[in-house]
Structure formats: structure tokens, C-alpha cells
Image 1 (tube, rainbow, N blue to C red):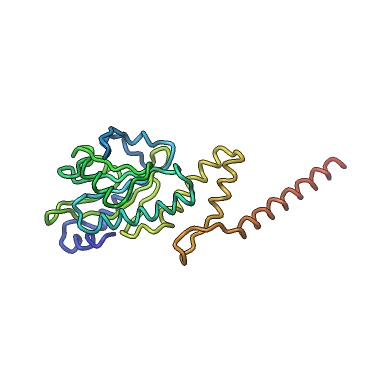
Image 2 (image 1 turned 135 degrees about the horizontal axis):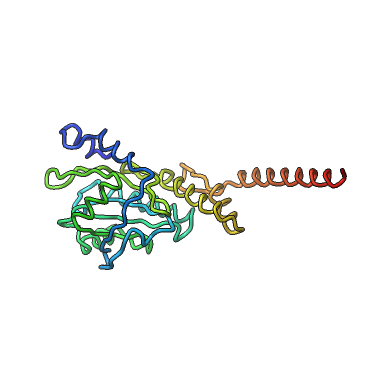
Length: 248
């Protein structure tokens, strides 16, 4: 949780336990499709990104500290995720929840000020009804306070079918907290269609391990060697069984 949310509990503005319960209660559900306007003025819908994981982060553009920090940390984590999973493996949507001010132009400025121009990262605006419905559907809690907002620091991951798969809390958005769920989703899709390409992708994902010393993922060849040894052992056993059966 953010420091803002913890402070809100002390002032009785947001019930932290209830907010967390709402956030967790939506896991496994599928938010209804909704329309937004992108920072480029394009009309888009949630279903436009079906078929790959969708990472959703709510911000308000006049936030002085927490939202920019979350976005910067999310950028760092998604940069690492791209290096691990490949380009086009997921989509990111940053959505402004301050509907009175978070216009497409403001969202464009927010993205530009943070150096974000990735083709798979969208900055979106919506009307009050749409934002109210989506924040509720994704379990995101916010409340007006002191000319701004108290709010959860929450990043939501939806799977390729639009189901809410994981909630990530806190300003840091640590790379493993984001990448590990994405890896599992990617592996699940690969196993559904076992081609040579998907097997190689699976090996690459399984063998990508997080190195806290560098803050990045690296390829662990020891895992590959162990896996190959296991495959060869099973293959040898299979050949032995077949030969024994034929000689019987």
C-alpha cells in the first residue's frame, strides 16, 4: 500500500482492510468491456487488447509524488519484462481516474514527461461513469482528499482472456512481482499450443532467473543442462522399454 493510503486509514478516509478485501475479491473475474480515449485521441476498448496480458495502472496527472513514482517504477519493470518476454508480449494501460482533469492532452503530457513512448503502452481517459465502473471492477479504491486523492497503489494484471489474474501493491513495482505472473501466463499459453517455437519460448522463460545484484533477469544454463539431462534419461528409458517389448 502507498503511504497515502496508510495515512488515510489514520484519518478515517479510507478503510485499508476493506480496500484490500475489495481488491482481492475481484481476482478471477472479467471486467465488462469499456471504451476510452487514448492520449492520441483514438477511441479504444479493453477488448482491443485481448489475446495478450494487459497491465492496468490508475493515476491522476496532478499527483505530486506517488503516481509519478509508480509510473517510473512500472516503466523500469516493463522494460525488463520486454527484455525477458520479447516485444509485443503484453500491453500496458495507464488510466487517469481524475475525470475532471485527466483529459487525453493531460495524459499525453504525463507520458511525455516520463519519457514513455512504447507502442504497447497506452494512456487513457474516460468519462466519470466509465472510470467509476472500471475502478470498481478492478478493485481500485480512491477518494478525494485535500485537493487531490487518497488512493491505493495498485497495478492489475489481466490475462489474455480478460480475467483479473494478479494485483501488485506498493510504489516500488518490483520487477519479479510483475514478470513472474507474466511468465506464468506466457507459459500457460505456450503449453496450450505445443509447437517447436513455443517449446523454445518456454525454455527461455523457465530459465530466466532474477538477479538481485543487477536488478535484471539472466539466462540460467544450469537449468537447461538439468532439463536436457532429464529429457535424455526419459528418452533412453523409453527406447529401452520399446526394445524390451519388441523382443518379448
